[in-house]
Length: 80
Image (tube, helix red, strand yellow):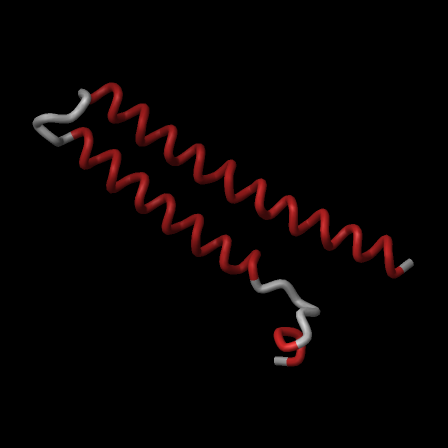
C-alpha cells in the first residue's frame, strides 16, 4: 500500500496489459462485424482491418511499456 501512496511503484504497466486485451477484443469484434455485414467494405478489406487492428494494438502497448522500462533504467542510473 505504501508503494501506491508514495508513487514508488508504477501501476500503469499493469493497467496497460488490461488495455491491451480490451483492444484485442474490440479489434476482433469490429473486424468480424465488418466481415459479415451486408453493407460492409468487403471480406478482404475487413480481414486486413482485423489484422491491422491486432498489430496496431500490440505495437501501441509495447511502445507504452518501453517508456516505463526506460524510466526504470533511468531510476537505476540515478540511484548509482
